[in-house]
Amino acid sequence: MEWLEQSVPVFMLMFCRITSFFVVAPIYSSRTVPLTYKVGLSFIITLLVYLTFGLTTAINDNMFYILLVVQEVLIGLLLGFTAYLMLAAVQTAGALIDIQIGFAMANVIDPFSGVSSPLIGNFKYMAALLVFLSMNGHHYLLDAIMYSYEWVPVTGNVFTRFEDGSTSDFLITTFAYSFVLALQMAAPIVVALFLTDIGLGFLARTAPQFNVFVIGIIMKILVGLAMLILLMPGLVTLFDHLFDKLFRALQELLGVLGQRPA
Image (cartoon, rainbow, N blue to C red):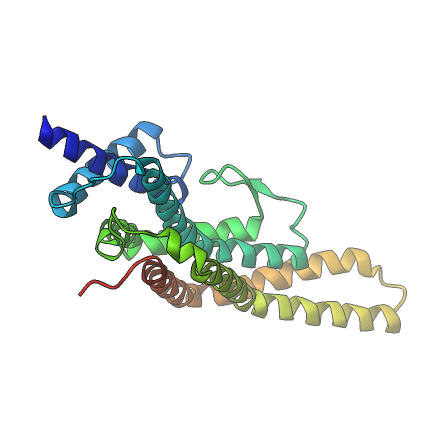
């Protein structure tokens, strides 16, 4: 009974961090994955983590157990949100392209998140997920949440990291960097469509008899799709760079929340 009294609270704390991570993390948070599978996977991973890191962990003061639960939930949400934020840059880039190409009004429902997403953004997001799965990125996410206990143990005090503002600075910097990546991914097509608008403007001035509004819609769609086809071979390299930044961001977040293991 003493062993159960000591092990069950530690196990439940680990379960809180891992389940909250799966609520936000890409792929695992998809609505197409049944809820029972998510809970079962969380339980299995929690059991492995407990057998690896939790056998020697002891919680003596039960008065602050609720604060420990809140801390574990926040850590899991921050890790999952950071991973999702980098992948959201792909959809943001697609949204910028859709605004220029004229597809912004034809949004579709993303089956993974259940929200409305742009056409090009949804296409790029699906391609990014395929590249992510092909390079076993979902395994790296599992490694991140499992080995996060080496950086931030259950008994660690993360709230002091929140007070000094390092966590908020990291989130703001990561959000700004993800938006910069979205601009860089959308820049070639956006610039090409901008030059198309300039050419149509010259055409409207030199040949007013042409209906530029009708021609412009067709021209921008053709130019946008042609540029997308030309840039498709380079998407794999671009996504590899994006995922490298994703894993570095997760490591930096663990460094902000805790301490690098010896």
